[in-house]
Amino acid sequence: MAHNDTDTHYAFFEDREALVLSGGGARGAYQVGVLKAVADWLPAHAPCPFEVLVGTSAGALNAAALAARAHNFREGVAVLEQVWANFSVDQVVRTNPGQVLRNGLHWILSLVSAGWLLPPPRYLLDTAPLRELLRRTIPVERIPQMITSGPVNALAVATTSYASGRAVAFFDAVPSVQDWHRVRRSGVRRPIDLEVLMASAAIPFLFPATELDGQFYGDGAMRQLAPLSPAVHLGANRVLVIGTRGEPAATPGAADSSPAPAPPSPGHLLGFVLDSLFTDGLSIDLERLRQVNALIETGAPGHDDGRRPIECCVIQPSEDPTAMARRHANALPRSLRTLLRTMGAFEARGGLLVSYLLFESVYTRELMALGYADALAHRDEIVPFLQPWFSAGSASRAPAARQNRPRP
Image 1 (cartoon, one colour):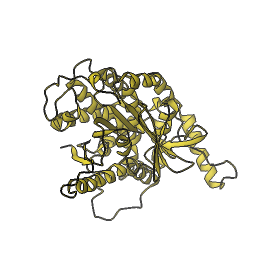
Image 2: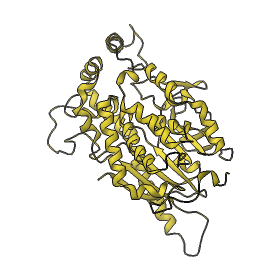
Image 3: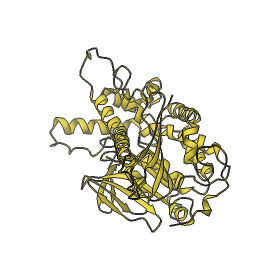
């Protein structure tokens, strides 16, 4: 069974459906499988059924692709399917042996010379190919038009500011939405362009940071203490979340209490850090979700302050992506395999890192198939979030259309 949570969260006064896509590197292919199932349930020319789109890292790229083609949800998903089903690592990072060798030697010389021979490198892998892929496949210039014409009300992309240490959700939305500022996190209205997307996907240590408006930003998962918060601030009261953490959450054998043969390698530690970045914030926010809703639902009798809970459904992989990645690790280019082997990423407990970097079709297609199957298994939980195309709680098509909804 897919890991599924149906719950309620926070309090708000709007009436919008939101899609929240978490980070996960190559695991983002799972989200495309779920979205393909949703697209198959909708009429062929239906617009995006979610008025609010929120994404982090790889999830931000998927969300932006949907927003740019919000007039036809199936078309947007088809573009994502085409990209993810035919992925190769060299579409994300430069993998030519000379480039990888130079990057590795730079790290070594900087380390052994304490920075005297060479300054510390700013990143391990060059993401210029990813920038070109996004330029070709995501027409970001269409996003304002999609928001103005009505298929979607808002798109938010999560980033992390290296200058302030704050989680910053850049958003484009209808005029009624205002910026927000909370403890260690904020929402800032800004056009969602290629630089914002590259910033959200800039995995620390591995990928270069991106400069935005005079400051450097990195992966949105780093300081994302409340992944559901942007959707709430953008007016959602029904939130469908597609995550990337499977069961078990760690590598095979992680629950084994037997002594480890050796301390964890750098590759395993980095994979562990990425797993925490991409998944722990969502788990914590869901727990907070339950607590807040319990307080709302047990409010003082006869006292109605206008607050109401927000429904939230979470779909996550029913199989462990780490175990899947270990089966396909040889699909990586030899240069990258060599680099990861040097870091210990292929040791018994090191598969976590590989599961986030294995942008190869043999792996991404398997994840997409898993996402599709998990969506079918949980159709009854997902369908209520597809209004107005389905009436709440049933699979029948609703008579209303999105364009008939009042705009704020």
